[in-house]
Amino acid sequence: DVTFKINNMEITVPEGITVLEAARRHNIDIPTLCNLKDVNEIGACRMCMVEVAGAKALQAACVYPVAPGIEVFTNTPRARKARRVNLELILSNHHRECTTCIRSENCELQSLAKDLGISDIPFEGEKSGHHIDDLSPSIVRDESKCVLCKRCLAICNKVQKIGVLGAVGRGFTSQVQPVFNKSIAEVGCINCGQCIVNCPVGALKEKSDINRVWDALGDPTKTVVVQSAPAVRAALGEEFNLPMGTNVTGKLAAALRRLNFDGVFDTDFGADVTIMEEGTELINRVKNGGVLPMITSCSPGWIKMIETYYPEMIPHLSSCKSPQNMTGALLKSHYAEMNGIDPKDLVVVSVMPCTAKKYEVQRDELSVDGNQDVDISITTRELARMIKEARLDFPALPDEEFDPYYGDYSGAAVIFGATGGVMEAAVRTVADVLNDKDIQKIDYEAVRGVDGLKTAEVEVTPDLTVKVAVASGGSNIRKVMEGIKNGEYKDYHFIELMACPGGCVNGGGQPIISAKRKMEVDIRAERAKALYSEDASKKYRKSHQNPSVIRIYEEFLGEPGGHKAHELLHTTYSQ
Ligand code: HC1
Image (tube, rainbow, N blue to C red; front, side, top):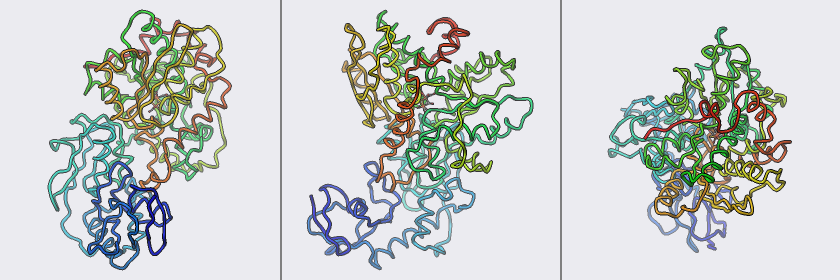
């Protein structure tokens, strides 16, 4: 431990942390804009300037390590003045359309300006770029709002290891841009949206599809149904000031119903169907000498990553569509038929924690005669905006159920939204099928938790111990890819990969949490708790026990992995 003085108060903190973190641990805040714990600690924005006794110049607290006996002052006139000038300079070159900005009231720059009492900007003058890049189906970049904090760049390069953003120019011409000054749509971006959820301001946002949903809902010739992903219920409440980790499944169903969707369904139903198909595929590959390890295929950011960067690994990918698209394909076929609706007049909307789902729905492989399985995908944040626009008092809504059949799901489906959840759901079903009994011990703790890369061995039958791995976030995915290539995973059977760190609960479409708050809580763990507690409360906790899943195979699909299932629920990938 290290003992030193901050604002004349003696504190003791662990060695190796920064003055910023030490101060915050003792309830002394120092403002920051560019800091992102463990990811972007570069002292670029100069907002965290403090005085250190004996040092002439002010120091950036976010990169200044604690040391025994130092004396730090966070609130001197000189430090306050430096921060003010820095902030005024940033604001002078910022496109300040605060009332209409997507990040209004959730903007770290706006909060700082308010907290530091900035009322006018003395440096008004020429403003740099005003270019808006909206060619991607997922991500919109507005350079005029960029504050050059480089948080997006650090996340993309270091955490996701995709590296499509770079810093160019110097001084006034500095910019953060996709490589080769191209559109983000043209540079191998995997659409994960981690840049968006780590941007302090409105320089990055999702491509909004809200108006398309309102238009569909207002069109009397259309039947408009909605499906909501597992992870949405773990975070939507945050948009309405409910505590992080509150499960809002019941209010989510109630809100969707009050937005006037004709059917209020759950992607979790499709997640259960996915387990039937993926479990069957795994058993077949194990029994018949197919390509192993088999890798999950539900995260569209991961799909884009393998197609772009590891096409030679595609034979490892499960052929299963994602739960979103399985649900969509069944709605466009079975549900439409059952209800006498022409599939052309059925609009399927999905609510996803994900920006890559906007890209996924447009994939050519996921349409029948030009009719997409899922027509429009919106993020958790966009749904929150629709609920606000419709003036629904979300926290006061009653808890309702999703509509029967396509709204029925098991506990196994709910945990899809957290890293390790798909694996656990699959193992629950595979173990029951191979043993032909209802196994009672189904909490597979070894694959739970937020670690980026986990491995486990599960004895599913006396003759078969399944070796599994679970990874989330691009850098961990890259480790697994390299591991497969060099033989490290040669006796593994099944690997779950999710593009976003922590899985969908931390997806690029989820509510945006400030960097300061993320220093205090692990949002991945908090949100995951909401899913595991719903799982534990469900009557059926295994996908194959969901009575509506049993029913759809009986009355429509036939056998898991059979002809009809293949036609509707499986897909191909491009190399
Ligand atoms: Fe996910 Fe999935 S879990 S990919 O993370 O398999 O987005 O929530 O909907 O499709 O079910 C996302 C979440 C989601 C699919 C499911």
